[in-house]
Length: 290
Image (cartoon, rainbow, N blue to C red; front, side, top):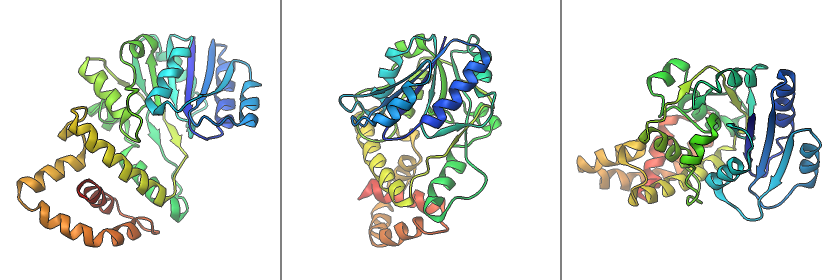
């Protein structure tokens, strides 16, 4: 049995649930689709729509569990031996999306299909998230096979339930960011292989640039805390690597003073119509040092 697990936060994933349900029914393969909303504020219309579909369940948490905790709760309720985690703002690139995963479900404990972004550029306010995703998340199969752990994300991941039972998500992480990185690191540290295939899902939930920047700043602060308690290492994040290098070269105080002055200009550039990812990387250093 396949359990399709959608962790959401104040989204309406009904079109996605309907698409996944139809693909499963066409295959005549036993399945369930579980949607857990971590917002603690149930949307009765969304709940009714999803619960009206056979083998589909919408549930809202009575208290916020966090991104890792919500995924663990989904896995605990799941009846299937294989779990397919898919974020609620994703969309299958293929009508054979479920079929491709089912074909491999008995051969590999963990399978990652990849992330894709639409070719057509979005409106200006979504440009930064779109550019970031295409450059830093939408890796080709060849790129992913060369670096199977660092190019894997949990937003489109098939995993055996027995593996997740042994290595659950870190539910102590309640701040935004890096629960998926820590989860993948745990798989790597325990020798769990990740099999990569071409079975991408589009990430359609593009945040406004100002929201994405705010989340980036929050994630950097969280990453710094995780580094201080030993859950992340310097080599896990590019911003840590560059910060360490600049400190080693003795120029970090000089650059930190400059970034403090130009930070408003950096933010203005990033939320504008033609953002640059190198500016985002510089902004991350500013967030780390301020």
